[in-house]
Length: 100
Image 1 (tube, rainbow, N blue to C red):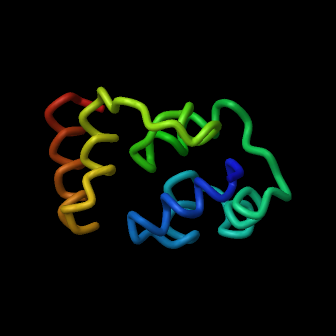
Image 2: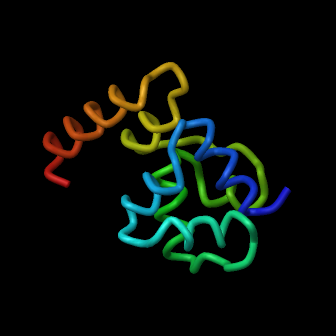
């Protein structure tokens, strides 16, 4: 499986649209689509940001190997039991608590 495919699959698991992900990064949905289709390769910096937003490790996006999520926000985003609304609320709360 490719990096783009893992990004797409994880985005879909989290019930995020390409528009949602694009908005989080200030880019177009077409750019996200191009990454998912392997037409563009994300920079290392973008890959790290994508991993955080998707609640996985960079290693997972590159290799498919599961990693331990040690930060609170990625752990919230990775929790499949939470609704998107609950995830956004919890992330906002954590950001407020830690001054992010």
